[in-house]
Length: 470
Image (cartoon, rainbow, N blue to C red):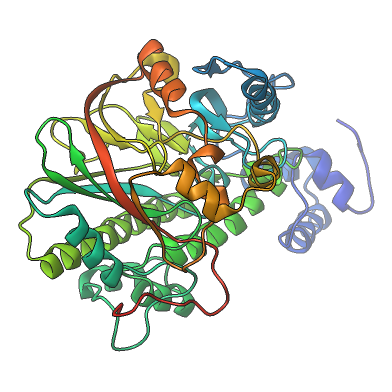
């Protein structure tokens, strides 16, 4: 052992013994030198302090200098798709160097979602005893819910929904809010990741809201039954964004300590740690809040239109799912095994939208090993929103909407068409459907043909709400 005789034990000695610098260092040094002054030899001191060396909280794949292989469930059909796939491969290869990662897959709707090394939309990443907040993103539990409204008139449903729902930033004003159960509020207050005043305020204000971007409220008819179907798409809003922020802060602490070369967006929380268990519970509470949020909009709409509800089911993406010690992170990917959650649809059905002019798919998952048990969550994009605007050329957003959604009742909540949400901004629906079938990712059981939908639209700072909305 180095240093057979020294006058004073230093931080350099502690680091050679395996201790990591931190706020505990001064106290460790003081104890080590006190033992040394009392006559203990260095080996005895090293042994006594060894129990305080932080150990990696998960198995670290030190061989991971090269990326672990991942499954591809995407076949490019043209140059745009090929270019998109090349970018997805580049970012996934970087993700697969993360030390906790054991496997991965990409779906037919895959597309980049940030800097290289960020899990792409349509990406699935499996990690051993680790939860990666960056892999579910800030829009935690983005999800879809369907309610069968029987013979209700689609236009009446859409009219009622437009008055009921709320898109855009922020939440509902006092006196216009939907109720949050006291039990759920108390459970959130008891969780260290959710108990901030800002989060609890958002829990109350954002109930009954859908946000912006590609979130929507869709009305259509089932091809199988002819019944009117209501489908909503949104995530956990402000509460989820606050949880993501808190989770990333804790994950960063572990990344700096155990794997500083890992990209910041791929930091993790050890699932077996006290913080990991609290974060997992926080995810389940946010999931419950999000499901309640969908339910509140559906229930208020059917009451406003005077309809009766038939069956109702939902499924999420942008979430983390557990199978044993493996934590499966789906970013824009939907679990395709029947018992992924206690409240999963008994028939194993999930919901896959394509674009506002195409049917929504009702599928039964296949739990395909080459997809880590997942299926796509939608159609994805082959190019950025900015590139799509460029490709429209001289055509205005209003002109493009008319051309691409002929015969449909498409409404933008803000009153202004968002061209980046037009059908032409997404991958061709037929190609995505064909790949779902060719890769055996799911079996299509029904098609919900569109009557119309409500989209957020381009949101100004102060939103013009439709007349009569709450």
